[in-house]
Amino acid sequence: MDVKNKVLENSCAGLNNMFSNYFDWNDIDLSFTRVDVGNKDVSVISNNYEWVLVYWDADLDKIISERLSSGIQYWNNYSKVHMDTLLKTSKHEQKVDFCAKYGDVYEITSINSKRKLSIKEMMAIYKCRPTISDYAHGIWKKNDEKLPLRESILLPDRKLNSEEQESELLDIHQYMRFGNIRFTKKEVITIRLLLSHCRVKEISYIQGCSEACEHKRIQRIKEKLDCPYVSSSGLFSVLKDNGITLACLETLVSYP
Image (cartoon, rainbow, N blue to C red):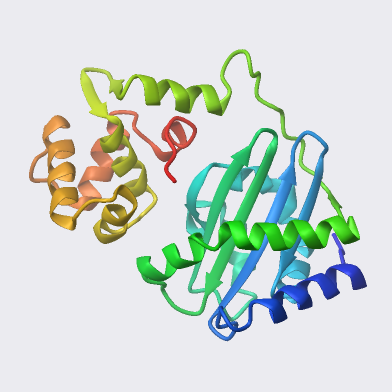
């Protein structure tokens, strides 16, 4: 889909200029996307207008539901076309989405970089989300520039299995069971992050603990799975054999 227009181009240029003293645009690109599932529209702004054109030209908006999961998502966990499209930009070494859900609206702060970002750098950008969001909403309020949500996304039945109820349930009852194996909420978060290919250092930062503490938690997970000496790749296989996958965890547990 061709989304070329002067309003969008000027909005992207404005974000680029406004935050040029904070972000090194030679190393990274930043995009902020608002997906309103109820009203079926999408608002987007980025420091890199050309990347927005590339994204929509590749029709990635038609599979945007892959990105609508609260938490941190790496693009290499999405379908192959995402990474194939990312290769069209020089900043393709790493791309990460930070997604937050507010009712029927999802807000995605997305960064891509020429190099692997450290967890400290990623968290620094993560903490900027409220500022970026406020700036973007101010621009959209002035211009009212919306793009169509072309993918058909069903809203959850709020009386039955909404994401909010699932997360709230895990907050009330701090355990999950897979067959005869019972995990704590902290252990489930660690498993989800491991399946998202996060390093132990990154997981410990998100969990708010030391690396040593996180290593002990991973060891407890292995012991519960009866594979105390298995390698990291072996652990993935054991988790899969027990029906524990990223897909089954992504709507059941989230993290800040």
